[in-house]
Image (cartoon, rainbow, N blue to C red; front, top):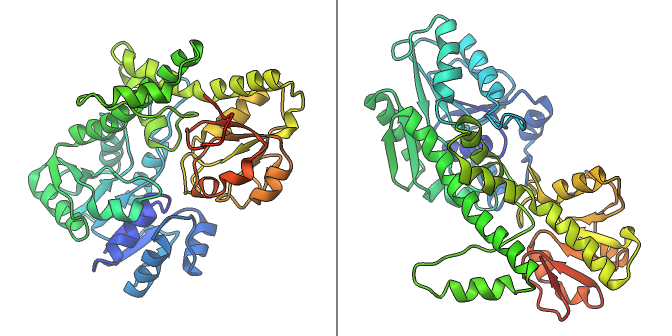
Length: 406
């Protein structure tokens, strides 16, 4: 039996996938309300294909509990934020989960850390916990790092098809865990050591962050000289060895907006390009806010309450708001002692910010100036409703005349 610890954006789909592929699974989370929702037959977030996978897992016998189970296999998938001052990984949730697992784990059990961590985190924080509990690593407790590699909006497909990395102290345990993931993973599964697995996951997300930062910096340069950044990127990408990404209002989620900071925190004198790239990406919400004020001045607008931000999530067609550029922009506005921007997102049903609307028509009726922060399908399919509005399109998806861009 497998005990999956942490039933959030990664842990829940992983537990469901394992259950539907013939494995006995119990999912554990300290959040009693979350566990109660799952036991009532409802998922806790929106994701394409998740409800169907959930129903299949229930038929396969998956169970959910707040208690840690006595078993020989644990998969720990809990949040790993970063300290915003030091930029280092904040491993407290991983440490807490490991401590609780060790209270019930029998000798010979394997602990698989799925949470993304900085290189050396398991050596620095997890191994000491195991030793302090009186276990001998490699004899009483086996330790493995199997970082997740999926993205909200395409989780179910990527769980099945993405390649995976297994970091283990010895090959035999690595092969055991590989066989576990092979029950559903159709991609290639590579076995390596734990620190290499830690570094590999962080480097993947850092590569993406640096490339996004280049596009965002290019947008700022082009704005300075009144050039069309999208036309320039289009022409440059005609070169067979050039593939510039598209700029945007910022980055969010856990992967790209958080993980690269781990390298900056751990290697401050070495990670200079990464540091500047992250600062560039983090500065985009402020850049968008300044664009809003510039356009308002140009249009003679004075009432900020007639301006609306379309989209609260960090990416299109999901309900994940972690590190959302829109939330960052709203926080920035508050720091400037200004409020009043209206907000709407079709995927966010609960009131999470002030001036939030819950239908596109009501939102558009309340504003004269719309800022497209997220390219949900809904807005793409209703561009005609934006006729007559001042539009700041942060994703270059609107083909109406007179549209402003970042």
